[in-house]
Length: 221
Image (tube, rainbow, N blue to C red; front, side, top):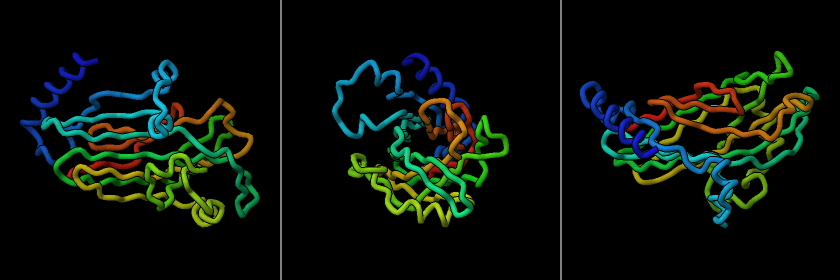
């Protein structure tokens, strides 16, 4: 892994030092994938609520050696919700935390259209992907639904709308946000739901199981 990271860093430095401004945000590469669920199953020594709630952690480095870290959580929830049309859903709450280890602010933009992910065994039916406006903080990790409340009312008002998020993360600071996934009851019976946000260049991608879509961007100001 270390040899691969070094080689990628060298190649990226040579390419982007000639073609791009180091503040553009375009020169970030995936330096390392940490804290995978497989690694966690092999080693359960940590008792930290933060460590135990993280599903995946990605570290991205640019040619200046500055990093952006993305942490993705395991789900909480399994509760049910019935929309105003009588459709019944089961939902899970996730959080993602982005740590800006750069000397410049980072602008985060995310947009989930209403119909982003089709449910495999229900053609024409889609997961509902919603982003509450609440800010996720680490002290909320032990709480039910990671501290989110009044979700039925939130769902009633937003279930058929696009989910938008725009935040600026100051240098050496972090910011956390929630993602709530709803699926129709009776669809997608293939085990426990897992999701994660990742970065490719400047573009953000969100994955639900094996399905991945481009959903936004990270830009260094």
